[in-house]
Amino acid sequence: MKIQKKPPEYSKQAAKFLSRQDVFTKLRIKTSIEKIPCGDIIPYRANKKYSRLRVGNYRILFSWVTDAQIFVAVIDGRGQVYKKGV
Image 1: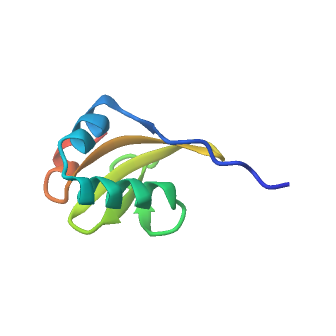
Image 2: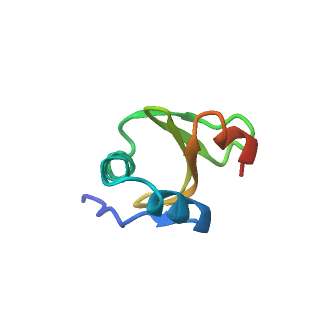
């Protein structure tokens, strides 16, 4: 039986970051999030509950809510996302 994916949940910071981006960047980030678990994903060292997805110069910190849904906690540029942390 195949598990049906649910749309990702976004934190307030992640939603605000996406709303401020141009259409091309927004589409690129959202497409990468929808393709999870494919992509450049590694565990986040500071908090093992989260994982890091790399999309160009952007980093996305997310966690699995269930097998079918993820929670996007932080989206930002590569130098800033680790300073904010989760």
